Image 1 (spheres, rainbow, N blue to C red):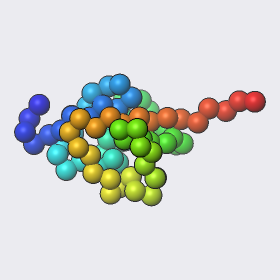
Image 2: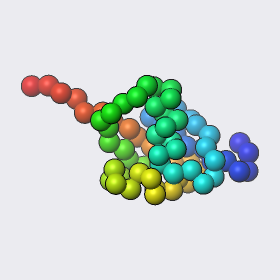
Image 3: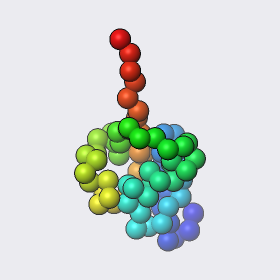
Length: 74
């Protein structure tokens, strides 16, 4: 890993991002690999993150990001 990057884990997959990455950067990278997903929730290190803060939430090296999609049923 380069010194100007950080490594995060998104749904058990490792990704390298620039040091100044925000949560939206990680989500864009994830969606480029998994396809566009409209409805989802996000947690960093087990703490859910409000959607209104995705653009300002800074990431740290080693953060574990969980992205979950709603499941319908009945």
